[in-house]
Image (cartoon, rainbow, N blue to C red; front, side, top):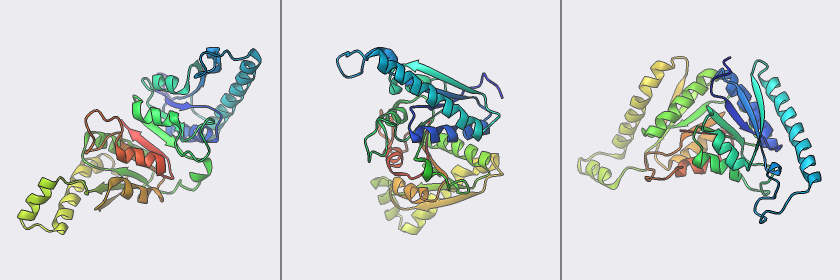
Length: 295
């Protein structure tokens, strides 16, 4: 395993989801023969409490925080080693907020993996602020991992990917096929056709085309998009699912019985300048399984 390859990066904050993120990331790094980088953002090293007009933190508080961080990183390394003993694992403590540090780390990472909620998240909040920042502004793909007990029985389930024919959608397909192949998992490719523009529908209606013919056209589109990927990944069994409705709803339905869901950062209907599409946002907030936002 090359230590010069881009690492799979995990943000560590001592929360249950961050440790589950380590376990998931260790397996992913092993599949990709990449090193694993465990990073903790040390706010206490700033010497003041953020958002309190520069109030200094007591030395005793800083020392206690450092002890916690040392324990968290040790536990994270042990979890990674148990999941993939052959991994090259690096632990790093960087000064700054988790958002700032992990966004910077994303510029040199293969993949950033974070828990859906950190220690600072409010009870009932599904997605933490760091996960939101990374999926919106990160410079590489981001995986958001749910609570430990929610992924425990998903190992035999398929990978699900959203397909819309866009550039970000192609990136999602690459990640989805890679993940399915590495895990010997089946792949479910989901394509929704609710967002046909009014002009296109009118043209088809004028030509006396029925809704069934529209569905057939969309099925052909999906088959064409997948054709090259099937050739590149002959070991992956692919199931095609075409449906009328919002993409997020169709993908959420499949997420209930998925190992993970892969989506592009922005879909075909994304507005110029929008950093994260509505489908990706909905899945990140509501999918019960890990979600990978490819970019």
